[in-house]
Image 1 (cartoon, chains in turn yellow, purple):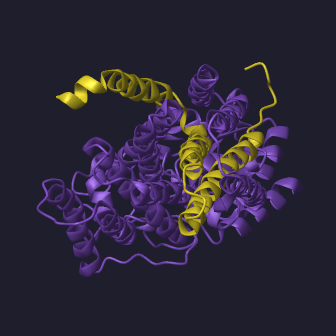
Image 2: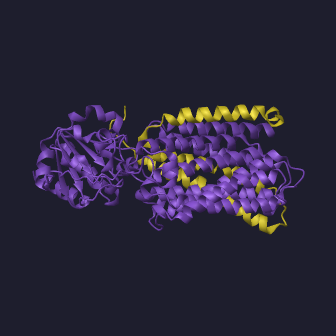
Image 3: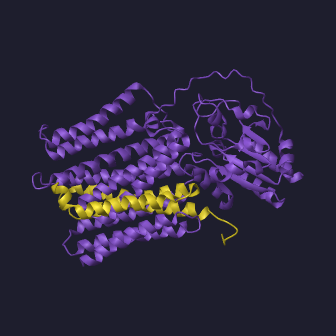
Amino acid sequence: MDFIQNNLELIYFVIFCVFIGIEIIANVPAILHTPLMSGANAISGVIMVGAVIMMLQIPPNNYLLLAAGGIAVFLGALNISGGFFVTGRMLKMFNTKNNKK
Amino acid sequence: MNVIVEVGYLIATFSFLGGLKFMSSPKKAKSGNLLAAVGMVIAGICTFIAVTSKTIPLLNLSIALIAIAIGGLLGKRMASKVQMTAMPQLVSLFNATGGACAMLLGIIEAAQIQTNATSMTIKILLLLGLTTGAIAATGSIVAYRKLAGKTKDNRKTIVVLGSRILLILMVVLPFLFFTNILPLNFEVFCYIMAVAALLYGILFVLPIGGADMPVVISLLNSITGIATAFAGFVYGNKAMIAGGIFVGAAGIILTLLMCKAMNRSLLKVLAGKFKNSTNTEDTEEQNIKSTSISEIAMQLSFASKIAIVPGYGLAVAQGQHLCGQLQKILETRGVEVDFIIHPVAGRMPGHMNVLLAEANIDYVHLKEMNETNDTMSHYDVVLIIGANDVVNPAAETKPDSPVYGMPIIKAYASKQVVVMKRGMSPGYAGVSNDLFGMDNCCLLFGDAKDSLQEIINQLKLI
């Protein structure tokens, strides 16, 4: 109960996010499912933000943790840049002659 | 300073939403991708602004920046080199990096935590983020290896049993730990959970069949998203929570769509099982008519509207560019060519659309089966290339067939069906196809690519 009381705002936020996310994504046509997926994959790279926050809190004399943190940030950055670039490359290929449609 | 950061995260959250929203039309999707990427950069910059108020050790800062630079450059390189047929592998590889990042985050955070000062909620969230991240990481790597053909399916009992035992352990152990029955240090416990989750990721993807990969990739994608959201809770970072949840939602929707399109429940896919087919030894002789290249070329040139139903076999044969050529030639003769794509064609959701788009096919002609199934009789010729189960009428007529109930492309309803096939082997589901015996159907045996090439050559002569 305490947990709910303390985090009510966050719980509202989560529920809204779930519904908005489902609403928006359910409208994506099958033709764009692959770009949607790799785009979403890139967005999940936002985990890098957490990795950076953590990275900057590690005591600078703890080299093991620093190395692990560095790898975490690197993996996150790889996820973001790879994800967005590959999505962009895919989307560039979707072309049509009648641009008015 | 704090306000700027909060607003920055807010903008990032909205840009993710907008980016996903724009994905609903092929015209706007490019700007959507850009928008989401800009949001990501803003989120990144905000993170650095947020910590400038504190004194940060130079070493940490430089490691972080260098890691971002290397990761960014490498990602760009990998993305620009990949072949479109290898797209599913790459996406699952990137998914693995996201999962691994979430796992490392959990482990490092656990190593730093003051055991008593941290609330139980945070610890639970840390554990959840760590385990989901670890499952996504190794699961995606196995999926990657399977898609690349480096690992074979493994349905040995020990694998299936092992994964179930691990799953039970991963549910039970935290209970024991948090009720203090398990006398362990939190850090040590995190390591145990991480190892269990890493192993589980491997065992859980191993038995799943190659053609079920669209389901697995979407599911793993969704798990990474959820791991991100858990990590977001730990830091109270709304951009992370929102981003993670959107990704989780996208992954789950796609997973369910794929399952529906294959007419199998998620649990069955995960268990690597099929409907126990009553293995009706289809003894009824099929009256199969075969056809020749020149005959097909004739039919195509006299048709006014044709459809091509591509399956994964087309992509394996690298025939998508020839399909593009075929379409161009026929269009100059006033023949309308549509491509009808089943949701599970390819190795990830929507994969076939990307392959055809790469072959310069106007996306207006890429149709979903729901758009065309009612008007199937308008097509003079339907050319089926490398697809089998998705056009099997048994899905509608034979309740005892394993494919029964699966949504199919009603190719049989068109005027003439031509199936291009390597041999008479049945499709992935192991069922014989009633379509082949129908009066309006004929078969052309041979490699899809060679056959297409010859049809094109013939058409040029006519």
